[in-house]
Length: 220
Image (cartoon, rainbow, N blue to C red; front, top):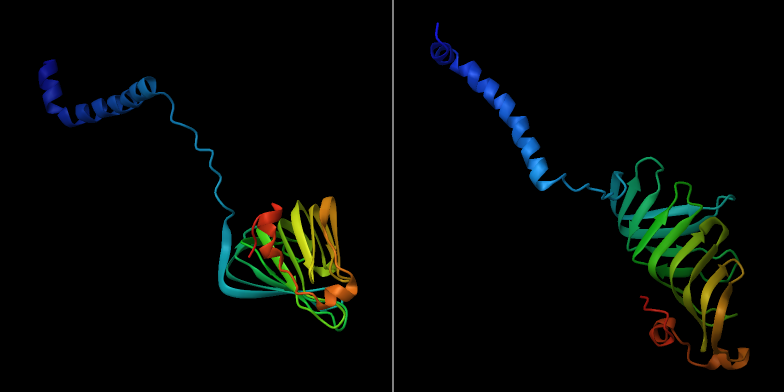
């Protein structure tokens, strides 16, 4: 039997063999001409095992007392460590002393660990405490805050503007213990203070009206 006759009788098998040879040869030629494809080093967001919409969470201290609450249009629980990634959180930090009002605030993004012992507020952060008989309204404008809700502590290394009544203070870096309403600016501190008597009667200032002028960014 001639080679031509053999190829004609087995043309299906020959075609398969040719395709098997041509496919890797074509791939090798493409790699040689175009080079290796770029490496995709993008790492996406944490994988969520569930998503909550228009939700609210509560955190309690070691004594079972309410420590803080947080509401948000969306919360993603990360698979693995069960932490929460939060969009546009609005939060309330419960005062520990009778008669002292709670602190309220908001931020663009937030994060809370599984046990609720640590939280982060990312981006611009605004907080305020209403006036009460022993003190005028207080506000805080800063960014990128780390907090420990069960201890009512928080801190940031970013610039901050604090107001209490008509008094305004600016600085870089802030530590706060909200149990005793103690807020401390750490570096480059400047501003103006009113006496307690004058501060009680003066028109209170909101940090959002002075933050941009002080160079500490905007909060709201």
